[in-house]
Image (cartoon, rainbow, N blue to C red; front, side, top):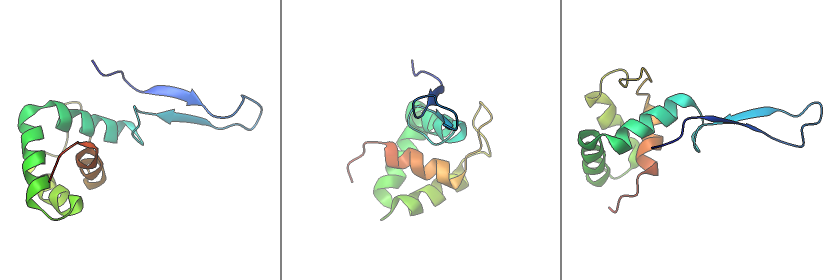
Length: 95
């Protein structure tokens, strides 16, 4: 089971320190959620791998993948090009 987002404090807690939120290494909840679906849903994962190997760049593979996906994940996260590209970059796939 993958843990959800967690809040982290940067600095030593002194006045003026910024609070930063991370999502298991992802920039935001949307990117985390898209990566979770692509890496854990077998048909999505297989298509991501197939496209990753077919196209010369992750960006080209992500553009093609985006055209095949619905607008949102079942959890409501938008399948944005950035989120798809980051999810595909995070997969450990050999070309």
